[in-house]
Amino acid sequence: MKNLKFEDLPRAMETMLEKLNALDKKLNELNHHFESQEPETLLTRSETIDYLKIDSSTLWSWTKKGKIKCYGISNRRYYKRSDIEDALVILKQ
Image 1 (tube, rainbow, N blue to C red):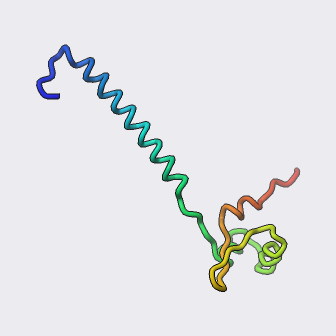
Image 2 (spheres, rainbow, N blue to C red):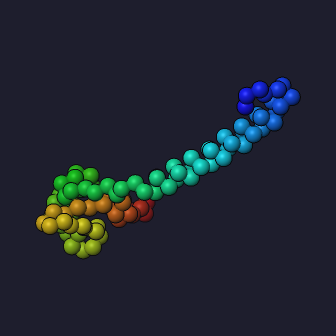
Image 3 (spheres, helix red, strand yellow):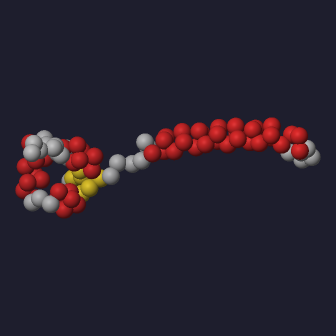
């Protein structure tokens, strides 16, 4: 863009706007890609109990009945926040 003449300014601005729009589009695509790649939030049993404000026996019962999915590593149990939120249902008023 060295030696830009006044007559060339409108075309140069148009080119710059096209490039900025293309860049904005690419950034939005990358942002969408990385948003969908966020790791799942895992909660421990005690965090799940606190989150739902329930007793541990209730959590055990709901897990046993299949109302909430439980994931484990060794003897530890974890609950996905999305599974917990999916298990919540709207009650009729």
